[in-house]
Length: 483
Image 1 (cartoon, rainbow, N blue to C red):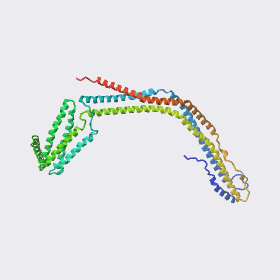
Image 2 (tube, one colour):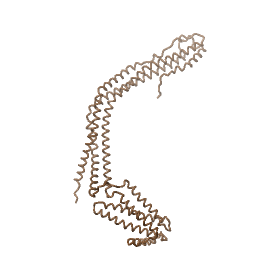
Image 3 (cartoon, rainbow, N blue to C red):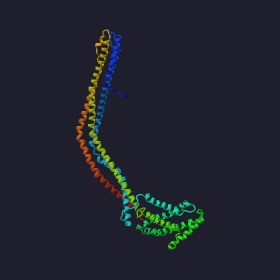
Image 4 (tube, helix red, strand yellow):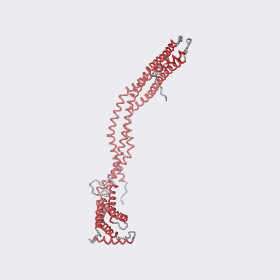
């Protein structure tokens, strides 16, 4: 959309042009002495001046129309504002809105709180049954913990690959070493994890845990002796791909490794001894990592994680419910505060429009006067230049300076000004009538909001706790009797 600009001295800038036109027309004896109407140059100049006057009128009319539209919109808003203020002052539904908001959250919170109570009961019951006094102690990340075991398996595999190399080189040794490390470290870690059961109160579990340790000690001695003896036999196998030869070597290693329990085991060489000690040490390390892979009391960490999850879910739900309640209370306060400020906002807007209308009423006559002044200046410049050159008398109309400023009209601004002033007065009356009432309502909402968030919500939480306890008791009553 093209922007309309006001008068900025456009006519005055054309003075040299009209001086030249006056000289040029005089050399052709124009306009003639007996001419009764202005020539084409003066007619064009007047048309331009009148167009500039019309532009100023258009700008003024646009300002008047904008102010009138604003006054009409403000009148409609004033009617709605009165209705809203009356409704806000008469609104006594705060308690019912809060109750409805809390009731909508109650079912979910009761369920989450009941889940937390059940988890606490199971957690405390497990502690009581097993005589546990300390807090759970387990790794934050099972992946990181077991990755250490895998790293140890890899280390043992790489080291053993050099011990088991034969005619097939390191590749053959690596394959055998991988199997050896997997059996050695895997069984040690598994038995170490099962050894934790010796901490439980159940005699069967306790005996089973100690049995795992009893099994681990001779098993790790035997396995590492077996692998050590097999290393020596494996080196002597001419064709590792021959299953019969490997079976014969393994049987010989088995027979030799069993003799370690009667202290009659013989290491084939120093490398076999190093292999035995390395495997034995890493087995105990894997056993310990298996034991510490979770809490010393099997099942304690699972119950602790469940309890922590239940507490986090309950806390998050309570925080969300409180946030929703705060949002509701804030919206009610914002509504009253907005109504209290709306009159001042509208008065400020209308006052700005009224000031703009006053400026337009002053600016249009001033611009029209400037246009007419510059229009007369160009006429006189053109005519004087013409008279300075021509040798005949000038036309009679040369002495006449027609007016163009009389075409402006500012009558519409009178009615618009009255409308703006009336709406401002009505707004000020509403503002004065309800200012104290709205401030009192806002203060009351702020005070009650603090009380609701402090006492009502805490009472709501206590009610949730009681309802959850009732739900848990119902679960206990409906449990079938053990046969």
